[in-house]
Image 1 (tube, one colour):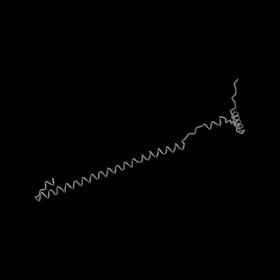
Image 2 (cartoon, rainbow, N blue to C red):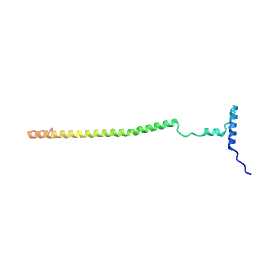
Image 3 (cartoon, rainbow, N blue to C red):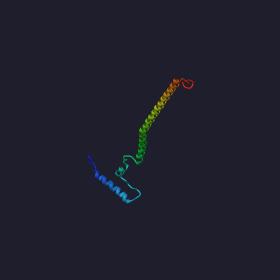
Image 4 (spheres, rainbow, N blue to C red):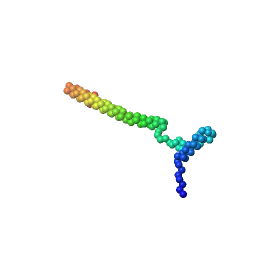
Length: 120
């Protein structure tokens, strides 16, 4: 003979009755049926507040580091441009001094004076 399956609703009602009787009795022993504890054991998915704060802290440090790269490259480019201008001005001044020296030597030579010891 095949057994019939018990009625699930009847089992649930029995568990609820057991729970209510034990809870209302208020004795030292309390029965909590498994169907009520099942919801408490479920682990919630998601992030806690501390995990979120730590993630935001790490993200902000990384963003500050990435934001510093364009600033540093701009400073390096300006430094390079200033150095290039300084070299250009120095070469220009040296060219002018050499031109003045040659002109002065030419004037001395045309007048017949020799200062070879002072100017080479």
